[in-house]
Image 1 (cartoon, rainbow, N blue to C red):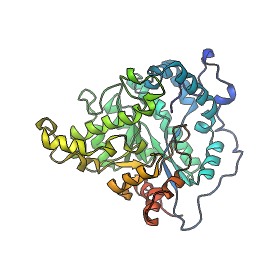
Image 2 (tube, rainbow, N blue to C red; image 1 turned 135 degrees about the horizontal axis):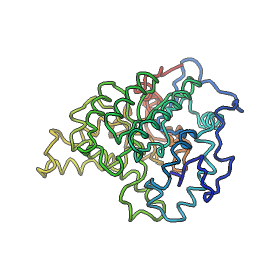
Image 3 (cartoon, rainbow, N blue to C red; image 1 turned 90 degrees about the horizontal axis):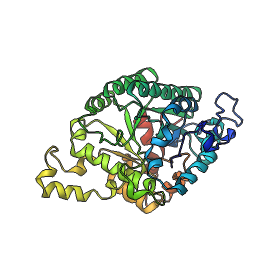
Image 4 (cartoon, one colour; image 1 turned 180 degrees about the vertical axis):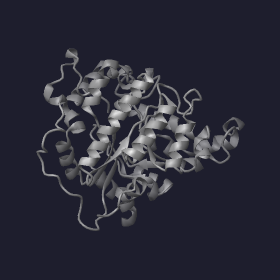
Length: 376
């Protein structure tokens, strides 16, 4: 999913073509802007899609961000080469709005809830610079949503390496820029989100108070020495890191202390969503699994939301059966090669799913979480 470096990278050793790295935001769109579907039609909303801000990428280049990302560190040379080619091929989809709109129309998507490309978290930056980069990313996404309000709403980012700065940017992004949620990684520089040294309790409390959605999206697995071959740090590592992050949010009591949190999990919730009974058994069997939470772990897991990126109708059907159609949302992971190219077809292929449930999954749930009119 991830590139080995950023679009806009000027490192001559990487041999990126200029065509692959320049943005066309300032250009007139080369395709007509299709309006979302007609009156009273249920909107199709993509809750899992990404945008890369080239200007921010250029500013952050002093950090050599590509070489600090887990998908680069824990990858063999073939994977790095494949990722570099993907960067060249897909960079326009990340930043060129004309290309994006054409792809949305082809896929049947009316609105994208656009979130930052995961490698624009920049948690490894010095906190004040990280906060500056987060502001720039959020300003860019707000500008995008403001230019095409019928097609995009914005999901922002915050500098989680500093809890106070994260809260400040959360409030600015939501209250001033009008962003509908915040995307967060599954860890902060290798630390669990519940690590006391991070002090993120105040962040989760403020998110709960504001009532905005969190979109949790991994960016490779940490300590992945055994996952360097075959792109396993993404194929296995991304859902594994989500599993670990969610387990800590549950067992460390974040979900119990902040019951109003609305957290959407990428990639259908990782492995925990499909193997939840083991943690319930542990909670019954062992006192060290009951030190914080008062209820079975799965009761907190049921509060999460899950995207549809399962690649299999039976697995998607099981997810819907377990957590309810009201907790599953259409996602594509656009524009990466680990994404779902036909999200509507996947949902339609789930057997015995009622039309009303399909409509919730395809857009109704996202409209409710993000305060978007469900029909236009």
